Image 1 (tube, rainbow, N blue to C red):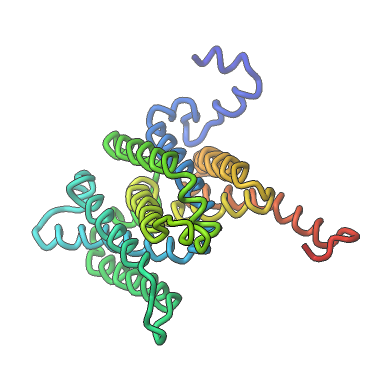
Image 2: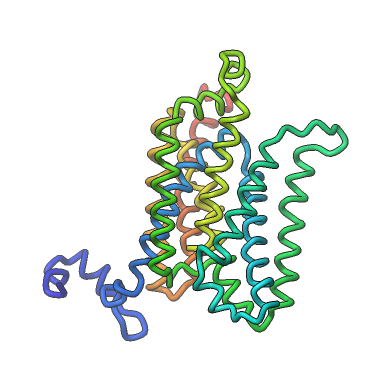
Length: 311
């Protein structure tokens, strides 16, 4: 394998780069689960992100992300009260923090999907509370479990280097299930997202489809946080879709571009984190941010060109 890589100049310069006495090619067997998990998270999150941006529910996804993180922290807190070590809890993905993360996220999605009728408490206020209160409680739990905070922070803030086989399988099944739901209900989701009034007038159960859409977003966030952390998951759900929608007005093309940007960010960011010994989550996030540059340049060009009219 090494001889084949060395025979291809570009490939050899990329894969045989050395860090701490180990080449990227040698490290691949250790890193492959993390790379695959990051790519899967980026693919599904970037796809869903188009709906997040178009429906203007960025702060809904942010609130769900924080509430899901609180679920993870609560799992460690309860386990700690019963004398279980953080490493033991972390290894029980489906029966431990993974389960509580999913439950908290789905309950939050169901609640946030409801229309707020109370005039004194706006939707924005509820989202603010849903973001800030769980964030504060999570920090308090981290402080209470300071001796085991590192294991929890790996989940909450991103450490996609070491992903278990179980986590990878759960991530793959989640990605397949979410994408299948969106394939089957694509027209309904698009119609209710872009023109909810007409969709309702046409007899579509708009609220039901909104709930299903939010539940797929919540489930994806909850499972993905356990794989690569909350920060990169939220980034993949916002940045690639924003970059895609600044480059095209066609919805189908926006989905494709968003997925390409997201997966590319995950792969390149993971590679750069190895080469330069950077934190993996922030490296992927920063790489995703680079894809905003072409769209920003296009927007400025359209705005300032003669006859652009400030478009």
